[in-house]
Length: 281
Image (cartoon, rainbow, N blue to C red):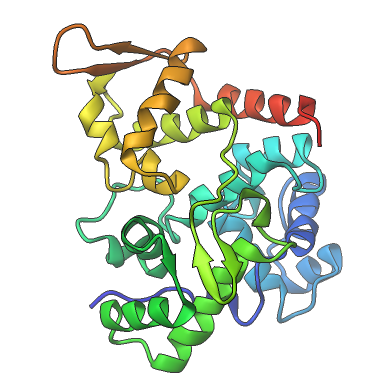
């Protein structure tokens, strides 16, 4: 049976100011010390908090093996306070994969845990919901997890999206009168979307220079669910990426195809931060 896999929080929510202590230390030292006492000393995080904050940093795609990931290096250099919209979407993107990162997607989404199930299976079918409704569904999907554990960890998942010190800038979820809504997202800029597309492509179509448009539109762990939009809205996003020379679309003769025109995802992420920095606050 699948497991919820959300207990890594250990009662500590996603909080950017605490993540920054981990990320800045990794940036300054080159890597975090193996010794927990030294980690605590260098980050000024307590013995109970240092482990969860390192796990949050890893699940957000910013830290790996005590070192900043390439994305983490870009984020901390371009957005030293983790305030940009691109950072919120970057962290959400990697959080949606649980602790599996960009591994080959599972046959059953719930096998990767509660976060993956929530983003890629629950939300596409529930554009509005209450906390109780989500807990009910999680209890059915993850029956081996005890009810109090599911309730507690579900709240940490939800708080990651609406608390001001977490990912609230993206408005992937909004909360009003105890009802969660998914229709008010602040979408990332085109280059951030291009980065997400490039990483999905790298995972699912690593040897292909072109793919069928339908394959991307209907990918269950693809661009539409991770952006929180319906699949029929993706065409407008693709048209914008084509206008920037990031992709080419071949639609004259069916079936429609998408041709990649980027070489490396990371310059797309760099450009996304450049656009964030040049946009008015």
